[in-house]
Amino acid sequence: MAAIPELNSDAGLKKLDDYLLTRSYLTGYKASKDDLTIFVCLSNPPSSQYVNSSRWYKHIVALLKTSGVSDERIGVSVEGSSPITEGDVATLPAADFKDDDSNEEDDDVDLFGEETEEENKTAEERAVSVKTSTKKKESGKSSVLIDIKPWDDETDMKKLEEAVRSIQTEGLFWGASKLVPVGYGIKKLQIMCTIVDELVSVDTMIEEQLTVEPINEYVQSCDIVAFNTI
Image (tube, rainbow, N blue to C red; front, side, top):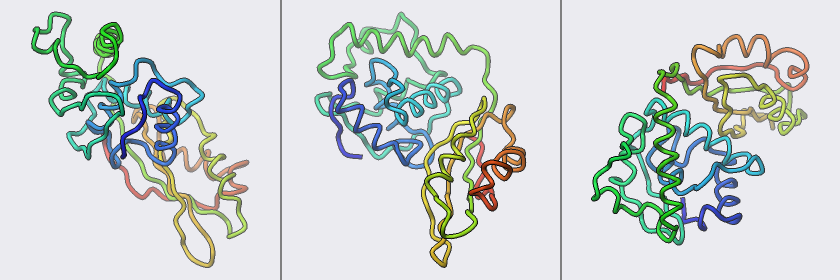
């Protein structure tokens, strides 16, 4: 991902939102330290105006509660901010959050470049808040990749995806998607979602929601391509 404008500006949030339009995470198919790099640069959660960024932000907050962030990274940067090293973000997952009495050496780490000292303090307090508000262990999560096939080449795939994403339930988070050619001018929708295992059954969702009225106007069948525990 190329450098983006300062994240607490409209231009920066718009670029981040556009980038996340077809992605669940900044790097690959799992949350990584690249996601944390951007996360710590946001002084406030993205507003509902930025649908993709808001969805991503809430998901990263949920993953931080269980330290569900991998060590993978390709490197992202924010224009106008000092480079953020691996050491800077390594302490962000919930299991490793620092207490308020962190030593002076840690206090000197500048995660936010030109931001004010007050803004830095706000971000640090937000990180500590995530830890203290999640002492109760959260249920396990899984990442699921689903193939959704239309009836024919005349099916409106945009409306099909809108119908799929209209399924909203506690513990279900829709992610990145793409259209994949299957032949004879027909394309299938391949879409990712993250589920809280105790709250959502993908098999039940397919049988009782994705392949029944009114969504079956667009959907012929669904297949689970990959199912991985996070």
